[in-house]
Amino acid sequence: MPANLPPQYHEAEKRYRSARTITEKLAALQEMLAVMPKHKGTDHLRAELRAKMARLMDELEHPSGPRGGRSHPFAIPKEGAGQAALMGPPNTGKSSILAALTGAPARVAPYPFTTQLPQPGMARFEDVYVQLVDTPPLAEGRLEGRLFGLLRNVDVLVLVADLSADAVAQAEGTITLLEGWGIGPLGRDQRPDPSRWQSQKPLVIVGNKADLDGALDEFQRLEAALGDRYPVVMVSAQEGVGLDDLVREAFRALGVIRVYTKPPGEEPRLDAPLVLPAGSTVEEAAESLHKSWRQRLRYALVWGSTKFPGQRVGRDYVLSDRDIIELHG
Image 1 (cartoon, rainbow, N blue to C red):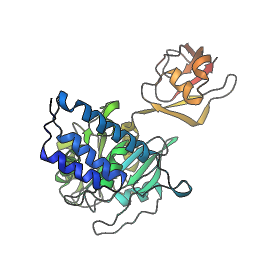
Image 2: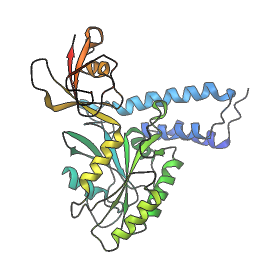
Image 3: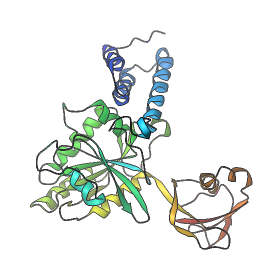
Image 4: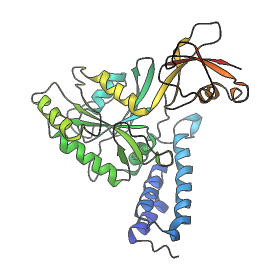
């Protein structure tokens, strides 16, 4: 069966062949997949494109460069419990939020497009850190392939809107731009399909500048319009209000749990939890410590989610956030 590829595919293919960076290539490949007809004649080509994307994403996530440095400034290695991108229209205060939460040296100015390159910082949530990345603004006509590649690689999108303007239009416009680039924002309690994690991202919406006149009314509009689907948080980076709620929602959106280990006969180690995907089992927690546990693990004692403290469980027991485990081989 012939592929019957549309003109948009061939245009995207030309951009792919002329692309110089990984993220530009990823953007072109994503567009090629998006416009490609779905039938048996394109199955092989679709598989080839996905294989190329997988190789490029691996290179983007594990960049190599001189002396171990990043290959380019839009490749941000992940740290902490997960990586969340602060993104949205110009002049919404993303850099101010990053500076207030992490102390990272972000550029803050009252005019748009101050941020030209992404800037990471680590925000503390209880006993772990969430990596926040301030990104250049999303605006019609200014989207770049490398920014698109960065957003495809993060774990969570944090959409920042300005409560001193039309926050609903800003949020809805940003969501439309994301969808136009092949990124589907996920609502509350939705998790990405493992095979499509690069194009499905949990979304948290933040209304910033809560200290300005009229902000509460605008936040209520924003919450009424989008709060049924997405977590919506009101903050003021200037006053330091609501920032803990922002980090809490970003952590929840990561879909991870914290598990603490307890050596037999000792106190639990509460300062350095294992960070695992939600739904992880005792066996998976043990293997994250060392692969040798795969063969020698017999059972575990668990404190937290069990019916009673220190309950003996099997290797397939599903753990919950803040459980304590004692492994026995």
